[in-house]
Length: 157
Image (tube, rainbow, N blue to C red):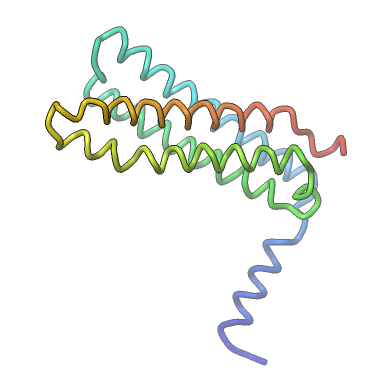
């Protein structure tokens, strides 16, 4: 049987092959490093924003973009490592995956109100607090995911 479906099936099966412990540990390490940089960048941005009583302009925006890119890289490496058949049923992996889902959902939910705050009048100040609350939830969930992943050692099963 030939066709486009076979290519997708073969690619899907290729993704499900076990990576091996050295690769899992390397991807875990890369994901943790990128995630830690993302969290530290956001915390640094918040510290500067509080100290300067504002967002810090272009530098603040660049720090947030860098944090976003590092967070995406961390999630990419960690989710791929968690999807490996050798560790996918590990309770710590399942728990960390749930925390990453919470972080992603909170961030996605903060996007629309965050953009709306930029164009709405000052009377919608409560929307800023909603964005801050969702952002804090995303940051806490992301940090919890990193802590769970740091405690996860695939070789100790």
